[in-house]
Length: 191
Image (cartoon, rainbow, N blue to C red; front, side, top):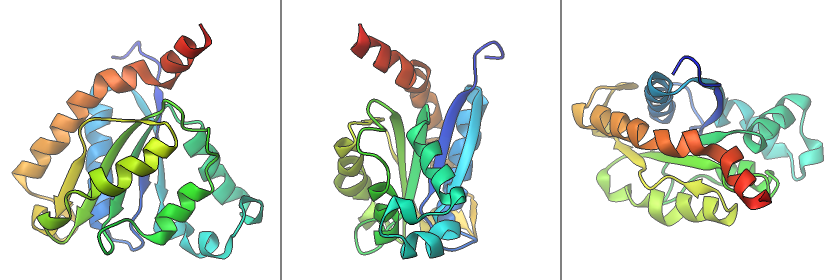
């Protein structure tokens, strides 16, 4: 692993508050991925961008800081995207962030999807909301996603053994997708 070049992983936590169970899940997944692959991790916390994103109708209205986060998303080797569930979906602000991403920027980018919710009844948010959003971008969503409910946490820390196992499994299964990455997929298109 030490001779491998670092992959640029952009981790997006769609939580609007801090502390956040969604952020805790993103941090757990980022840590697990960094244990199996050399990564350069760029963390985006939606809550910190919320005031600015909420005022911007167009990308040209964003500050250099917010523009930098969008460029990080668009140039990532891989994405880790997590959202809390709001009324059976992600928040409007989460969607607005990705509305500002260029529609061709994520073609073939591997994306690990994750979500948090109050109970298991929201677990299908990954399949019914997040996966279609990234399919629009023609991103390569990983077959495994990670959903966590309130009972998987103590406060804002991942404490459930079952969730820790799911995080570890997701990291292991992500390795071939992330190693192949965007550059291999783009090279095959150019050939």
